[in-house]
Length: 79
Image (tube, rainbow, N blue to C red; front, side, top):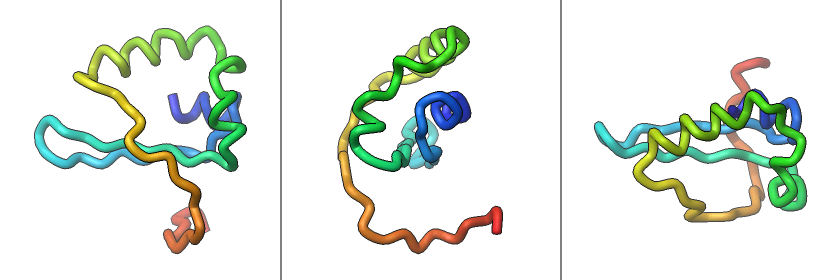
């Protein structure tokens, strides 16, 4: 899904972290709030099934924090 969002909606990517056997935390990065707010309309039909699989595999999905990045010190592994 992240690859489709990057290609069709302008997202910058996402990360998934495992906290325990059953708990995961995922987050995505967007270039700006407007791009994130308006995302979804440009995705291809194939995204519908992927979204369903993601939702079905989760007990709960929610936005906990909506933040603005003020500094980026992560290493870019592609460099």
